[in-house]
Image 1 (tube, rainbow, N blue to C red):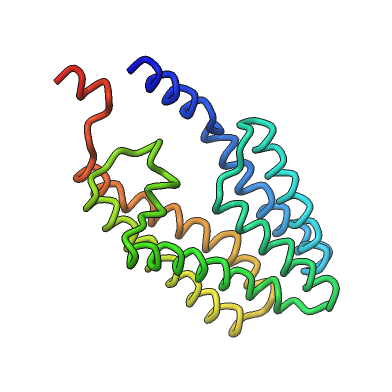
Image 2 (spheres, rainbow, N blue to C red):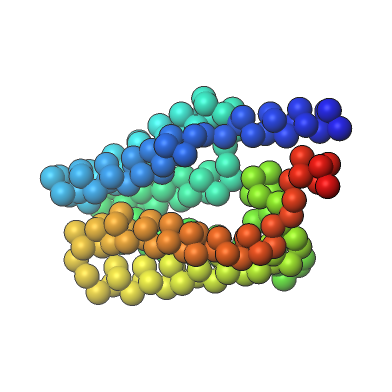
Length: 201
């Protein structure tokens, strides 16, 4: 039991504080927005790529590990950002958002179909829930990612590049935060007692 508690404590320490986590997620996006407003989408894409790498490097330096989903997102940023600059075609950076969200949705729903709860693997150290709770949450997030992919396709094909940048920075991220907040009742309903609560009981 002591060894388990030690491992749990180590896992708990290996997390960025909420403020730093927000900075590593929002910093590159805000830089992307600011550079685009002054120098255009291609300069903004380059700044986004560099700042995303720096944010990931900072995360590694702080907690000595890299979460899987940000790694996948970074690979897409570098790949499609590189194509955007190399081919001087802004379509690639726009489509990147669609593909990343569709991939996350496919991973979650595909795993669910084969009885693999990848969301629990990613969040299980932070939240304790029943099997039913993880299945419902995985289904919701999988569908949500597909909805974001579809929404991005509609937006980038029908508005200007500057309007799309505004949508990416000030639309998609707030929508994601709101959706995550809306899942709180489900998570509370299916929450399992923590180890200390179980011992007290």
